[in-house]
Length: 408
Ligand code: SF4
Image 1 (cartoon, rainbow, N blue to C red):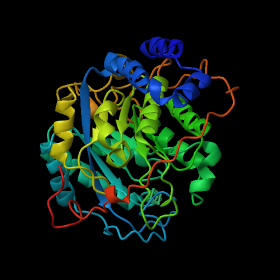
Image 2 (cartoon, rainbow, N blue to C red; image 1 turned 180 degrees about the horizontal axis):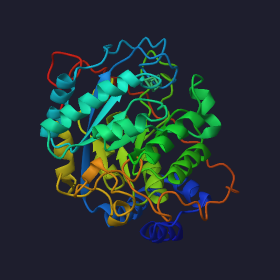
Image 3 (cartoon, helix red, strand yellow; image 1 turned 90 degrees about the vertical axis):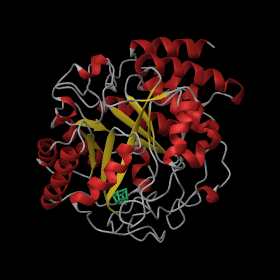
């Protein structure tokens, strides 16, 4: 297919596809799906080989959030029945992190519910970061604490954080439909603050919230412009007790096309399959490793993932290898600029930052909009609805905030 040959060539050159090309990936037929995966897989292997980076989530503070993000079971008014607890102590967080690291993770993602941290919260998380770094040599730490105020990113960096995550989630045009308590511009501002402080920026999206193909392409192009080092792709888990509980819009095929599109638009960044992997990709998860070079090990913030051991077996069975702490995640050109970016473990390692999210940046990287243009093509056909698989959704009842062993 000419389209795929063009996209592979562009991906190997870090050249931005046109919006029409990105939309065409989402509109490919099931007959062409394996060709799409194979093409995006060439780009993935060119920049990341067969390595899979494992990340481990520690929910430092769960539930009780005053914000109203429709997809989130920690939101104001959620009736999901998730674990609710306030800040884990540094040692508790470090213990949870250690389980993930022992399971093969090289990055720990410290997440807290809420609109954003107070300065006292930043102090608290800083102490947790120092504890985790003291007790686990070589670990990468990413903080995800919501909207940042001036100076907070710098303080987290000084405490040893390598990266900061704040997702754009969806397109600017639809952002107001999913959240009213903060804006898309607020989110962009926080990613830029992280970037500006020299943290490696991690920012991604949630697919499956009823968005159009154009919305998906919009948010991925916006991400490329922000130039994060890592892009988590979440597939909405329509959790009972949230406003989006009925939004079962995804199929495994749709998820693969979305991941392929993200890979073509952001060829040299860490593309991570995030929440919803087990629920929506299901038995197609191993195929998705040809597109993404990173996953979360074990459980998510409020829902359970498949057993950590099953993640490791899947990676090995699919012919991939877990990325070690001695291996650099990002391609050399991204770790050479402005201080290293996450994934570079040499010298200053991931504690020195020249980028936001997991990646450093250069002009042709995920930040250039040449060739993007404005889409002139008609809207692609709406994705077929997926079947509800509520049987695959389990609220997390183990790990951080409980007395039960974590899944790692
Ligand atoms: S996504 Fe974050 S800010 Fe939004 S409701 Fe959930 S915890 Fe709160």
